[in-house]
Length: 255
Image 1: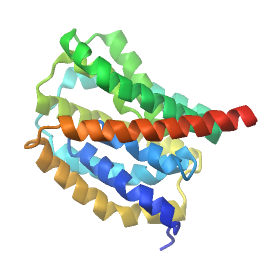
Image 2 (image 1 turned 135 degrees about the vertical axis):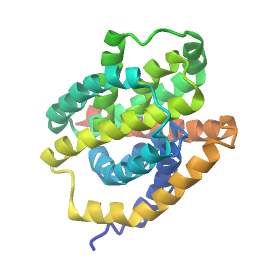
Image 3 (image 1 turned 180 degrees about the vertical axis):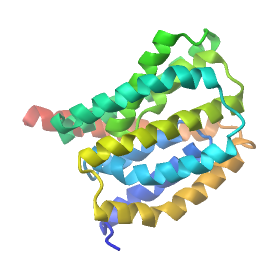
Image 4 (image 1 turned 60 degrees about the vertical axis):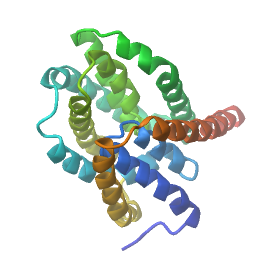
C-alpha cells in the first residue's frame, strides 16, 4: 500500500484527524481545523480529498448513532441548495489556483472564528421560522465551501442555529446534512482527479485513529461542557488561518 511518507504531513494530519473525529462525534465545528492544517503542506483540494473517504465512513457511524434525532423540514429545504453548491464548486475548482484556495480557506475559517465568538450567541437569540429561500441559499453556500475546502459547517450553522433546535436534534440534523453533502462530493472529486492511490492509502492508514476519535466524540458530547474545548480549537484555527491567508495572498500578489 502506497502512503505519503513526509513526517511533517503526519505531524499535522494526526491532530487534524482527531479534530475531525470529534466533530463527527458531535463537537460540531472542531473538524473545521482539519483541512486548513493540511493545507499548510499540500494543495487544499488534495487535502480535502484525503479526508473525504474518512469522513464518509465516519458519517455512516454518526448516521446510526443519531438516526432518531433530526429535523426533516430543515433537511428538505437545505439539501436541494447543497446539490447546486457542490455542482458549482466542481465546475469552478479547476479554474482556481492553489494559492487562491489557500487564501479562501484562511478567509472562511477566520470568518467562522469571528462568527463563533461574536455572532453565534446573537443568532441563537434570533429565533426564526425555517424559511425556504434562506435555507436554499445557505445550503448552496455550504455545499460550495464544503467541496472547495471542507468548510461547509459555518454556512449550515448560520441558518440552523436560528431554529433553536434541541441539542441532540441539532447534532443529528447536522450529521445527516453533512453526510449527504460528503456523498455528493465524490462525483466532482473524481472528475477533478483528486483521488490518488497514495492519497487513498493514506486515508486508510489514518482511518483507525479517526474512528477512535469519533467514538470519543460520541461519548464526550453527552457528558462534557464544550466551552473550554471550543476556545482552544478556535484559537488554533485562527492562528492557522492567518498563516494560510498570508501564504495564499502573498503568492497571489507575487504571481
